[in-house]
Image (cartoon, rainbow, N blue to C red):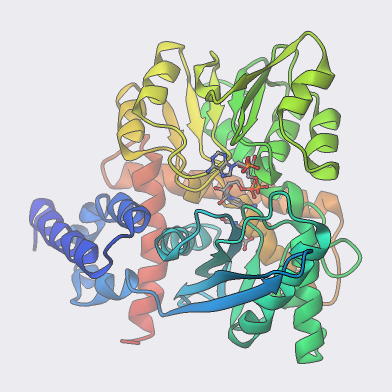
Length: 452
Ligand code: NDP
Ligand code: 2IT
């Protein structure tokens, strides 16, 4: 029997090898460290997981596709972007994960997201593998026609790699209902198939699931509420800081408000807004979803309760809860120290890997409940899988039914993470619980299916 520390030494060697084999991919290294640094207890306890090659296979994507995406802007100029799809692991089902359109996208970013997605999707308990894709295309300031031409060109290559039984993309940063519509249209045109289950996040009326737009934000609030319940508290009357002002942030604020909390901030890459009366969602939705504007417009139109802080971070606003919902590494050590000083009780990640490893450590040391993204934001992909189920059955469920299923899934993820952490000697540590529980499910499937 190998001890935990011997196992950790083996995992540390593997991490060094991952860094050498995947140079210049710091986000992927960070995600691999986060998972592999918590697996020693389970690998030491269950010898089958120490089988040579198992974890080595897990950290190597099954397939990685990179392609040229040429398109013409409104002036007729040819632009060239790079497209990606990383099909990371299909032991539990078709690859599943979003597409991100943002100038910061590169292979390492997509690999970090795809790697996270494997464990997140496993935690949902549904039959979905892990994948992610996207492009360094920047949709900001582009006309609808430009976005459409870009999406059509992107799908003209991507279509040969995806399919309802193979790989099912959805949205992420810069990809929402509009983009999914253009992507689906081009897929249908090229393949001459009405294959609803090839993409999720589709519009109502042509295969989309009710509650999919809301699911990530709603799910994260339910996860935060479950963490608070463990401590004998609830959301009622709590002040919350939320970063971002996109899909995840908006529906996080909506659910917080519905459950009696006061969400006082939102942000984008220009700065943040603080509104002591609580964010007015109708106004925020109008500015972000309809006008595709910036958050400073919110402060201008809201009146005296709100102000815009250019370049600032929402974490300096005192709050009981923090729900980072913009992007990776947006909450660092200094931010964590500020949150702790201001008495934060829980941090729950709507975004993927928004909290730096040093900040996670500080928060956990200070006794703050910390919900890692792969558990806390799994509601989005879970409802995507429910969308696939509805598509397969050629039916659509009521909003109430989808919301009920989402609530059950989030409760079950919380319980699984909590119990797993306790079982492996890390009570209250949701990072360890999520990583081990996700790993066990994927690893068991990989072992059963042989060396592939
Ligand atoms: P959106 O594109 O709808 O919104 C993204 C928001 O984050 C915008 O307000 C954007 O501001 C801000 N943002 C993005 N990049 C940066 C950056 N580098 N610096 C500062 N602000 C930034 O994306 P989503 O809401 O869908 O995604 C937000 C996060 O949630 C991501 O981490 C995503 O991976 C994760 N997530 C999304 C799910 C989904 O279902 N959509 C599911 C699970 C996780 P600006 O417009 O100025 O760039
Ligand atoms: O990070 C994520 O989980 C998502 N962007 C959603 C993926 C999906 O397939 O719905």
